[in-house]
Image (cartoon, rainbow, N blue to C red; front, top):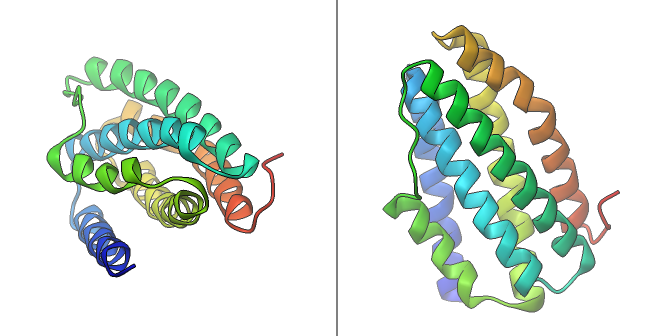
Length: 169
């Protein structure tokens, strides 16, 4: 239990640092890096949720996130390339470290941690995407951020429902 709490505190601090960076003049490249890392991480965690989750709500959430974030990553790649920006091809060490504890969890412990993480992560992603949609330099990247917001908001609602034990509709 102490290890889980330590990891959650570390994750919360990491997310606060990411939010601070988002508020401190994030460039379009910074946004692309953040969005790509988020997409790859959430797609991976979504696959784990389908395999290791206990409730149908968590499995359904995992499937939706894996599908949507894989699609988002592809769209981001096309738009970023057109804008002359680079897209990470794999998760970085920070995100690998975030994923690692989930690989050891199963059942109800996985469900609890996964839904809490997805709620918090989507709240923070929505804030970063809103900031890019209003402050981004490249029109195509700004448009991508704006167009992706409804999907992230749908994910947040589904994660909140799964956290309460409701099956996603």
